[in-house]
Image (tube, rainbow, N blue to C red; front, top):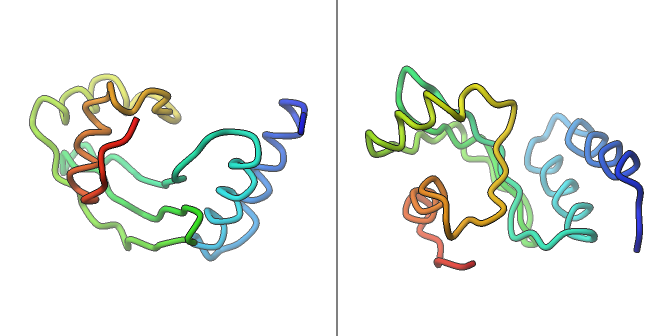
Length: 117
């Protein structure tokens, strides 16, 4: 199925903003995105530079959504500094090659997920 870039981003925006229930909003977003892109999970996190931690808000996969209630994920100092210096200035961060990302490795450890590429 082919969809224009504009239509894709409009539909993703509608799904992310479509519910005050973050689990439902992310699961709706996951289901839509997975029709067009290979995706295992959609996550909503926030980096808190003062804590040097990533706060997990929620995530969704094919099994549904999960509210993490701002669970803090502590980071190694080097990774925390990288996030403060580089990533915190960006509006978002996409991991196209999670196997190459130090942040991805920290997430895999924190979430106790199997390592995949």
